Length: 570
Ligand SMILES: [Ca+2]
Ligand SMILES: [Ca+2]
Image (tube, rainbow, N blue to C red; front, top):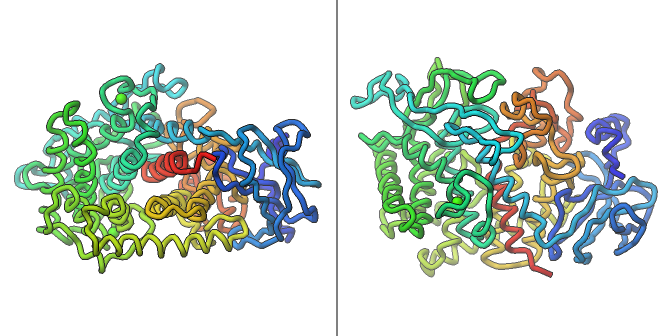
């Protein structure tokens, strides 16, 4: 029996918090499942029972028993919970967690390929967001749609005018992915996204080599993950002005489209202002991509060299224009991706160009570079990911610096995980706009630490964050469309809302709990509650908690693939 079937969990949670009965409402697990060798925890409301058991799904056949941990309050939800440690249960199967006096948990699956489908779907979500191509029924099934935004007639906006391309010049910049719930394309957010996806391939090729995504390029001469990323890289290459190497910040309508399908969104398209941030994110991700595609020279002759040359030119432009901050023109109202702190972008682009070329002039001073969880506006963490991957090139002295940075990060994060009432290293202040992706990017950094020094608690801490977005959370809600017993049904994603299909396009991570609730005034229904981990609304109106975005889906692909590859088999 699914305890969520009769009563929406978020509403129940809200009532309990309001009534002062602050304890979690149901037994929560990762609704997608666990690998046999993974750390497995269930969160249980603070009832009096002392023991839990695990049964075969839909039966009373007990396969595992254990003691519940002490009740602890989790500040993020205001609720008291107890923990059930099922890590020792490794036998593949479909189960439920049982505690006397409570409804059973959602189905708990243990399987050696627990995340294969999720990894593929999270990657295919990018295909579903392709601009300039029809999604055919043989690839897209129920979500087939005509092509939108050919982007072969794009106007140079006044803010982007140059001597060779005055205002109104028509250029072509087709392909690319729609950034999020809207239909615009932004270079800054593309940089971190393509990097993260290519890093997943680079670090765990065995997960992707034989993967068939059923996209138009399946069966050609490249792994599908590379085909999919190329769709966006080819667009990015067209965002560079060939005359000077500068990179336009975005390709956009003047304002957001209505809630229509891509083919029905026909506003004039513009490239807007060249920015230093766009040039550096472009340089970093192209320099990285050039290394990846160097191995496919036979299949795509010249592509790697073209990417590296483009990266160098963008870097040179940024050196000559170090403070061209993006400033939204008065007649443009779409996403800004404004960032005036560019030391991290310079460091990331420098690291990527240095690793790709070996030229010392690109190399940043690592002693001055802190480590941190990556996000579109703070990319220094990506520099560390690349340094961790290239210890040999880094040299002996800086080797120690790279390792020390990751070990310090991992120690802090595993302490947080260990102390957490949910065995999930998130605090109240971590619930920001896009919290799910921030948590997954934190897991991505923990995974780098694990790759450098494989300590089980570091991997378990990453697993805890992954669990949090897949249903082992106070909402009892999976945060990925189409996955888990209680997935989001109304993401802020125009095609999912406008296509007339009940189920949303699958494989998308939604933004997640966000106590800022910036959209609350415009929503016809209220959020479940104000507590950070409960500030979520599964409604199309909720762009602040329920939108999708390419930079959010990328760490979902990465972490899902990484756990599949790294978790001990037994
Ligand atoms: Ca392929
Ligand atoms: Ca920055």
